[in-house]
Structures are given as C-alpha cells and as structure tokens.
Amino acid sequence: MSLSLIAKSIKASPTLKLNEKFAILKEKGDPVIHLGGGEPKSKIPMDAILATVAHVNTGEVRYAPADGIPALKQAVIRYTDEFYEKTVKPEHVMASGGAKQAIMVALQAILNPQEEVIFPVPYWVSYPDMVKLIGSIPIPFLPEDGTFYPRLKDIEDRVGSYTKAVIINSPNNPSGAMYSEEFIADVVQFCEKKDIWLIMDDIYHRLIFDGRKPVNCFKYAKKQDENSKIILVNGVSKQYAMTGFRIGWAVGNKKVIEAMSNIQGHQTSGPSVLLQKAAVGALNGIQSGIESLRVTLENNRNVMVDLLRSFEGIKVKKPDGTFYCFADFSAYEKNSNKLSEFLIDKVQVLTVPGKEFGMDGYLRLSFCGTLKDIQEGVERMKWALDPNSPNELYIGDRKLVRDWS
Image 1 (cartoon, rainbow, N blue to C red):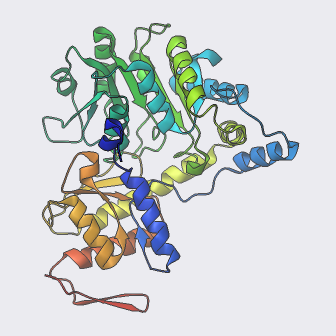
Image 2: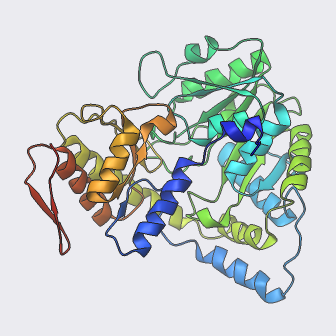
Image 3: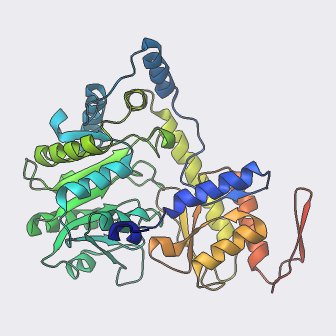
C-alpha cells in the first residue's frame, strides 16, 4: 500500500494510545492505575451542564459558524480582558475543537514547507508531529544549563533564516515548570524584533501553585495592533475539567484569525454548537471550582513528590503548575519506553515515557487522579523497581511475586 510521506512520518499520539490501553485493561477488570492521564477527576461545572441541557431542549442543534458562535466569542473576549488586560473584538477570536486544533490550525495558517518552529524540551508530545504534518521542521531544544527552564539565549542560538515561529507552553506539559516573567518578556520582545510568530499555549495558566501568578504575555508586547504576531491559545479542557467537550480558542490579529477560520471551515467546520454552549456556561458561570481544583492538585503534587523522593536514585523537581511530575528514572532504566512497559506488565501502573517528550530516562506521572491512586501507584512502582523490596506484593486478592532482579 502506498501512503504519503507525511503519513509515514507521523506516529499515533502516545497519550491517546495510553488512554486506550487503560480502558481495555479496566474493562477486563484488571486493577490498573493510570498515572499517565491528563484529565482532572473533578466534575464539570454545573453551569456547563445546564447550558448544554437548555440548548438540547430547544431542539435546534445546528451547524455553527466556522470561527465559533457569538456567545462563546464574547465569553472569550471577557476572559481575555480579565486575565490578559487586553481588549479584543470578535474578529480576533476563533473557537476550535480543543486547544490542540487551535494550535494545529495556527501552524497551518503561518507555516510553509521547510520553515522551522522552535520550542523547548521537554515539549508536549504533539508539537513535533503537528509541525511535520505541514511539511515544516520542528526544532526542539534542551536548555543549555540542563534544567526545565529555558533562557532567551537558548532560542537565539537556534533562530535562522527559516525560523517562522516559537511555541511556548507555560506552565509546561510535562515538566510542570512555569517560566519566569523575565523569560516571557524576553521572548515576546525578541520575537517582535525578529518578526517571528509566537504561539503561547496557555492551557494550564490558572493551575499554578505556591502563590504564583499567571504571566501575561501581552504586557510586554509593543505591537498591540493588527501587526501583532502573538497567537494565544487556551481552552476549557484542563481548568474546567471539560476534556471531552473539545472546546478551545485562539486570540490573534484579524488576518491570522480569518485565515485560521477559513482553514478550519474546510477541515471540520465550526465546533459543535452544543459543546460551545457548554463552554459559554463554564466561562460565564461560577468560577470557584477552578480554585478548588487548583488546591486539590497542589496537595496531590506534594504527596506525589514526597513519595517519589523516597526512591533511591529518583530525581524530581517539584512542579510549579499543571498536574504532572516529570521524574528522572534513568538510575533504574535509561530507556523510558522499556521502563513504562515494564511497569504496566509487572504492576499495572500506566506512565508516559519521557522519550515522547524529548527526554529519555524520564517518566511523566500525573497527579490529577485520586490520592489513593497516587499513593498506591507510586508504591507499586517502588516495589517493582527497588531490589530491596519484599518478594511479594498483594493488589487486592491478587498476589504478585518478584520474578526479576
């Protein structure tokens, strides 16, 4: 069978494959624990549910405009004003099928084949493949000092004549690192100076810990008009625990939003009007659930980090935000795919290999589940990896015996 070069170069999303594997094991009745997921376990806002039901009851669930319904655009305009102190108009906003689609459509609108996109390592698993889907070239970089916190020089050293865009995701998936205000300011001003697009993936910007405040990229932009090359991406998936609703948005200059909307119109049309109504309900409704989720996640983070630090040889930096720990397990196994498979096979704990994020030897562990799952999952991992562990472990009525060294 003959497939395109793009089809041959793209692999399945590892996080989605992991979710599928978890569902299969769970359906079989296996006592599997998912520490690789990216879905908060809190309930979606009641305002989102009520808005959905109210629209269903009208019996009028029809096509939506390619760039989103007016009510959602207005909710995003208010959100942008509140959190970014920036006044935008409906023509500066596009609703999409999740923040992922907003990023994909943005890349399609600004990139030509062979142009380059720069982003820090570790990176969200989809960035490289998204860039490749357009025939462009991803340029991931590991900060020179070996930390999770890039410096402007790391970007400057990689910018060339083919550089078209920079992607910044802060707080970062998978590391949980929140980049400093100084770094964000430097990147905004550098991209303006070099006339490079800057895509700000802000999907976790309200899920931050230890009294930190979100960084507003627009605060440092000199170009506040239609010449701005900042594309801000966000959505309801993480902060409102509405992952299955697949509603995100992009804010940018009028020309790029028009181009993105045209592309989206030919790909998927507008997102479901029903799900957009739910997003409007969440954005305009009671917001206390976000702080409740944030506090829960901060507590879960503390528990997971303490447990991981009880491992001999494990290196883990306390995340500043998100709901992920990115821990260095290379003292046990440098091949993170092999390690992840080992943990699934031996103790039925799902993790995401660090190689998928650009750093082998690491595992991404999620703390957005229950405390019980976090504690039991990490304890199972410790039993599987620590040679000084007892020979037997009970999971419910099931007895596991260490048959490996």
